[in-house]
Image (cartoon, rainbow, N blue to C red; front, side, top):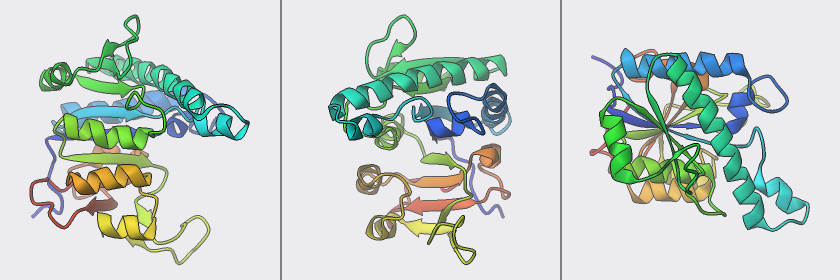
Length: 246
């Protein structure tokens, strides 16, 4: 019996920092092609429908500008602009690997992306396209983590998959503590209570209230989603019968 069930549809959350990989800034083209192949594997081999929310931290983070005395809303808007650059780059790489893509923006940017319209996005996904959601939720003060949970709910996804540099959630920083223990399964209530930084608190709260599971795994392992080989942490509410575990 399989340990995990293959989900029908996921929202893949990619941080901007992941795209810079071993570079100090920007986008690593080799890593972009590498991750695109894995996403195409999910779509073509695993038969999983995929939507993506991408951050912009490899280019700009609004909170950093705020520390320098700038208005927070201005900084956040600049950060959300960076997500468009990343989304276009990811989309180009995925299309180059063989799957159609639609980049959809929460704020009108007609020359480079479609407007995010829920029904249109659902139709794209049903046609086998990868939908890449950029400009976060369209509002300052909300992170792309919150946007990921929001879009997952709107697009009727089975789970949010947060792809990171570590293979799940630990009780302490595994890079600093050799005795750190990874959670296989973690209730959202516990993640909130212990402030385990699965995502930011508002994203966790929304996932909890709306019964949206979150699966945290290494970005290099995303092609294993739905198989027994995947390693990560499954974060869920007590009432998660409506959702498909990974």
